[in-house]
Length: 237
Image 1: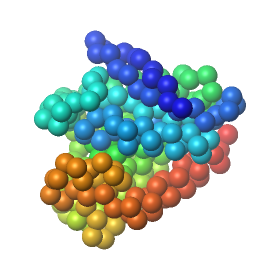
Image 2: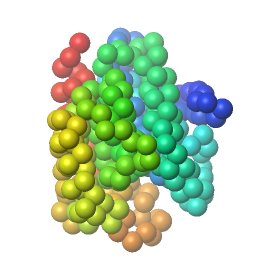
Image 3: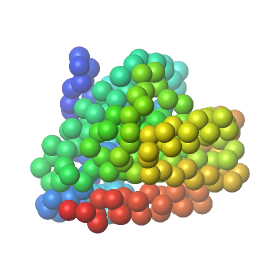
Image 4: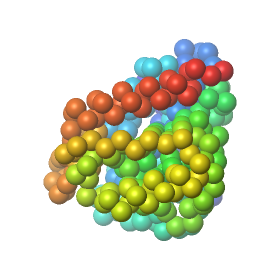
């Protein structure tokens, strides 16, 4: 069951969704970060799926608005990409909300993100937020303005499609170089012949070139994410 949680960051009000799989005992917390279209049933479903695995999952609200038309969502995405520090500020506010939940073990936090959300979890890692892993599904690999060059302690797993028009080869190379420079423990998994937003069954309705749901890639990516979460969150504490 999802529970809406209202919170503030700066002068903006947000509403995220909490799925508590703790059964009343201290449990790891996982921040779930939505795609550039905003909070959808897809990302809510992922939070519920994590709760079924025994996590407390919080699907954040990056924009402070829901059910946006595509042009409005694109405008909000550009705002958080181009305003130095804003992406991290909003993500960290949501992470703090998650960590403060009564059944969350704040020493066992992770973050997963889809599309724009993959950029967000990488920024949390680059800002050395208290997460043990940063996992991205079909993330963009371009960095937002103001992205720091700190060392990275969180384990990093990014999973993209080889046919993703959002992530050209030069971005993959720049990502690898930035991870190496940060001394990160990182992986970049590439699914052959797979496009952007491969985890989202709703994406085909947008009819965007190079964007397509792929059930097999989605299943494999989810299994890889669950394994890293288990390794980094359930095997400690």
